[in-house]
Length: 70
Image (cartoon, rainbow, N blue to C red; front, side, top):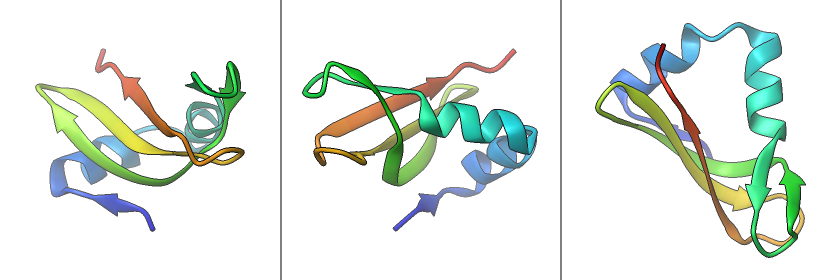
């Protein structure tokens, strides 16, 4: 299940669709020791940065993707 808070949803919607796909498909998993797809994530903000906390699609390990605001 994907959850967004309001501010995170606004930030995520500003990202072009092709970039969203790249961001979601290139998350580092320390258990797989590889780049993986993030699934079942929650999106929040930390200051002005977008933070995606979720699971590795391959092994279900916790993974995080930080999208820094520009």
